[in-house]
Image (cartoon, rainbow, N blue to C red; front, side, top):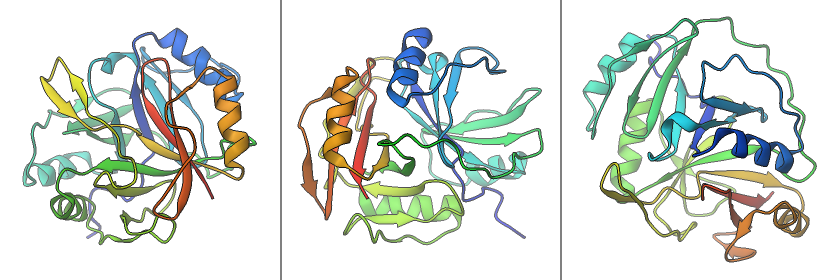
Length: 251
């Protein structure tokens, strides 16, 4: 029987303190119109090619969250109970979705027919989310946990040299970084009383790193270190008004 948790990340959640402000900021950055959403309150999502970005004001004060897909949410939760975890929630059953959280992951079943795969309008410089990043404290331990969680083996990323990647069937792939790539500081979460490395959340591809760098600065994004080169890729990290970090890499 197929593993209950599917190798697909429909979205990443970015916690925001002011949904209206953040929606307007990202709409301007991504040059996407703001449209009404049947969102259940407190969230707004931006379409990318495969893995989308959801702004979540309900999660302010908590780390970003990765969503994984399932068609068998009860089996998925029972399976996750067997994994080492800091916490796991009960299943929340709503009209549109059923989901639960384990650590910084949401496992979600959508109660609707899946949308047909269609290309989303790509920004000229910020093309798509191609990697979602797991920030590993212990690399071997994190690889083993996610290999078990997804029932898939890690491989070496052919794009970002040396780092392990777990390949998804569609959308972004999962990149596991022990801070060799990101070299990011920890963030203190007062509600959790924890210092965690969470930034950048994901990697956005670009065909022109210099132009993308100039563009995000012109839109008011904070870029602390400029363009860097490490592990075979050129990239920069920018931050939104709530200090959620995103990496832009030249493909």
